[in-house]
Length: 72
Image (cartoon, rainbow, N blue to C red; front, side, top):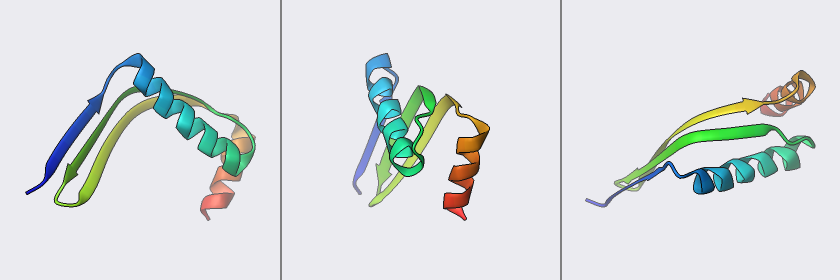
């Protein structure tokens, strides 16, 4: 049974992950959101990856509408 668990709580690593997510949203929508990740936990067990992100963010309503259109 393979098992791995990682918890990111350092400000530097959470900032890198937040910037990566922000850049991905920018490429899809054209505007960068403000994202602050408080903690991130990733667990890999038997070939499946589960994750939990505790984050705050700020984005305009126009951008949120664009994201909603992309999802549909």
